Image 1 (cartoon, rainbow, N blue to C red):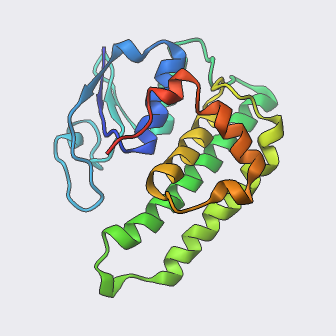
Image 2 (cartoon, rainbow, N blue to C red; image 1 turned 135 degrees about the vertical axis):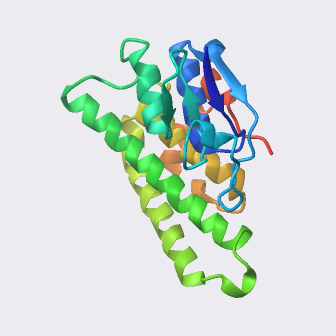
Length: 204
C-alpha cells in the first residue's frame, strides 16, 4: 500500500489519482487526511514532505516522495512505463505537455490566491493579470494542439492538461475559456468523461 496525503480540491493531487486510476494502482493508495494550505502549515504532511505540500506519498518500503511529477513517475515505473514513454520524441512531447499543464495550474493558483488569501489592501492587480495572461497563453497552445491529442488519458501530459482545464472550471467558473478556445473545449469535453477523470473530479 502507498500512503498519500490528499486534498480533494488540489489539481496536483488529482493528477496523481487520475494517473493511479489509469495504471490500475488506485486500490493500493491509502488517502491520509490533511489540511493543506499555502499560509497555514499542516505538520502532518511534513512527515512525508518538509515543505508540507500535497501530494506527498510514502511507498510500501518507506520511501518518501513529493511533487506530483515525482509521484506520477514512480507510479508509472510500477506499471511498465505506460503513461511516460521511456525515450524518443514521444517522451519529450509527454513531458512538455506536462510542463504546459503544470504551468497553467501554477498561474491559476497564484491568480486565485491573490484574491482569496491576500488582504484586500495588499492585492496587486497587475500581478494577477500577469498570471491570467499566462493562463491565456497556455490555453492558446492547448487549443492549437487539441486536434492531434488523444482523447483518452493514455499519457501523463494529457492527464495534466485535463486536470488543468478541470481546475479552471472548478475555481474560475466565470472564465468562459471555451468560447475563445473551441478546439481545446471540444477535446476536453470527451477527455473529461473518461472514468479516471470522472472519479477524480474536485469537490469542495
